[in-house]
Amino acid sequence: MVWREQLDLLLGALSALHIGGLQAEGAEIWRDPEGQFVWELLCHPAVIAYYERHYPFATPLLLHAAGDRRLPDTYRSQWQAELEQEGFDAAYRQFLHLNARFISNDVIGYFIELLDGFYVFDTHIDEFRRVLEQPARLGGWLTRPDRWQLLEGMASFYEFALDLDQYLAALEFPMLRGHVWLHFAYWFGNGGARMEEVALWLQNAVAHAAEDESIDGAELG
Image (tube, rainbow, N blue to C red):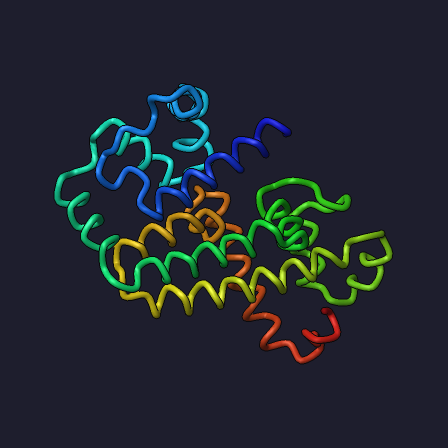
């Protein structure tokens, strides 16, 4: 578990750097000892299996391809041109703020751990789904300590998703838009069949909450 958390942090940091232009020109950044260590870790067969097959993350794949000089020339040239456009730095900083908000919010962290199949506060995603689909059970379920944070985390996740959607819609940089979407896409159904199922459930939960007047969103918060 600790190894996975550390690896997720590393891959997330590399993804964020990649979005800002890391390897856009295929620069040699892996020669110093620290860079070489990170590169060897990124290329380790078990790590590749982790971000390629088990938990698909597109941006580490792009970074790996860039380091191996496998990115098409047209892709790299279009990306480099976008990096040099006026306004790119400000748009990238907006992404960094969104990303920092996502990874530093504890309640969002609890909620996405739940989405990813972990037991959080003695709760599995299937139980959480059943509770929300049967509001009469909510009071009893909340008697267990800290479970309210999962409801708060879900609300924070929805708010983040809305802000991300607005940010992407307003972006005038198509390469940046694509990279940012891939950075977060795992949580919106691009993380394999199980996350597709979770994403569908989240959509249904939003629709259910909007239609059912017995669920007071502010009261739940």
